[in-house]
Image 1 (tube, rainbow, N blue to C red):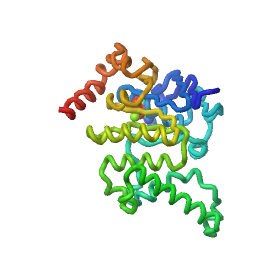
Image 2: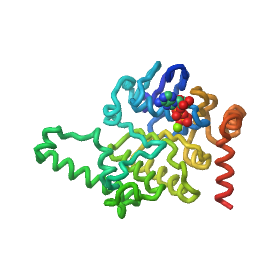
Image 3: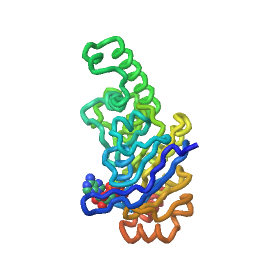
Length: 269
Ligand SMILES: Nc1ncnc2c1ncn2[C@@H]1O[C@H](COP(=O)(O)OP(=O)(O)O)[C@@H](O)[C@H]1O
Ligand SMILES: [Mg+2]
């Protein structure tokens, strides 16, 4: 059987800057793979390439054996790939419920004409969507915020709302871009538990970009380390964090691994 996601010799440049260089990655159905590396390594760019936000300069991306390299974003979402963003992108003035419902936009089965006529098909679909959104809110312990504008949510809840929104399209592959960023110890613990449960419950395959090593160590079966758009190491997270090339990459740049460890130690104290 072919892998769920196959990235082959991916390269991307922004003008003269080579952001990704010959990057390859295979992800099997049901895996939870970590993607780590110093700031500016190219991690978010890889998510943007997978989801069709950027056109690849070179290489191929296969999802369930199909070449999606040239597909538009909405088609990629409809095919089963969803994501969250490093910088939270909720519609701040809309309610939490509406934010989650909007995540289904690419999935709507009714036509614009149906919507305008407020046809039976549209109402049925809308009803299904609302029930599904409410269930997800319950799942993420956000029910009591359903009618609250997203801007009034505490930070950790905003991150959970983003995940609920990503899940409403019923993805097979979920791309999480630094979901624990800015979370304290107990929020990150909650997040670890939720991600693990989601993986079981929705039979999800996940690629996780994350700086908090504790989250990576707890969740990922294997990790790929990126620096300057190239893979510098790959393997089980416990081995990777002591890999000389990895330590050098982090220490030589922003020292994120040690910072994360210090933050963790401080939080546990
Ligand atoms: N839209 C863009 N236009 C130009 N340069 C970009 C753009 N997005 C990212 N870059 C550059 O590409 C490199 C990788 O960025 P990014 O993928 O965001 O890194 P990471 O997520 O690993 O921190 C950085 O040098 C960044 O400045
Ligand atoms: Mg990033």
